[in-house]
Structure formats: structure tokens, C-alpha cells
Length: 154
Image 1: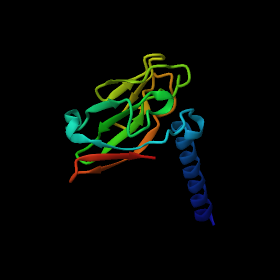
Image 2: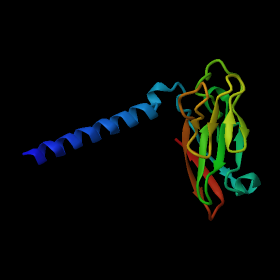
Image 3: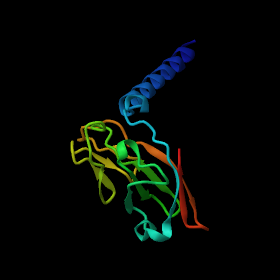
């Protein structure tokens, strides 16, 4: 009987630690104000030599016929030899008040209005000292090595 109570106590302590960990480190998309912008287009990577190296990022004012939320455009970064991330170039903190898009500085981007910084190499999450608490809005990207293209859509 003592073994059963001991195992039950360990199980509840485990659940408590899991809930505490996830509730403190994650801000859900419902709390963020950047809505998805319709995007469907192809980027021909032969024209963007910067994206041939891992860790390099390029700003696009539009992909296909979409120019992103509030016309801020998109940021594309190569995260590995066969993977890319595409983010809306809108700050998740000052998205309605800001007329400017995020600026690229190597593997992070910065909002010119509030100064929030986001790591674009590791998921688009804001740095700890940023005013922004939500990560950047990400879009689906499919890389074709045979055509050297990146198809972006949501």
C-alpha cells in the first residue's frame, strides 16, 4: 500500500512540474495580435545568393501577391542546408502602430519602434529583454533542391 501512495505522489509531482514548465515559458498564438496574411508564392533562390549559406536572411516586400500583415513584407532565413523559415516582418508588440518592418541584423531582427529583438535562427522568439512576448508569425515553406526554389504558403 505504501508503494502505491509513493508512486501516486511522484506522478502528481511530475504533472505539477510539467504544467508549471509549460505555463511559464509559452505564449500562445491566441494572445498574439498578428493574424495570418494569405501568402502563396515561389522564391527562385538562384536570384538570392545570400540564401545559399546557413544563417543568412533576406527581406522580401512581397511573396507572390501578398505583402504581409500591414504591408510589412516577409523575412526568409536559411536554417540548414535543406530548411528555411519564413516570418512576417511585423513586430508582435507594436504591430498596429508601426509603419516600419523589422530590420535584419545577422541572425536576429529588431523592431525600429519598440526595440524588441527576435531570434530568427531559432524559431522567431523574442529575446528576454524585449518588450514583445510573442514569437514572430511563421509561414510554411517547402524547399525543392532540384529546382532550387522555396514555395511559401499558409
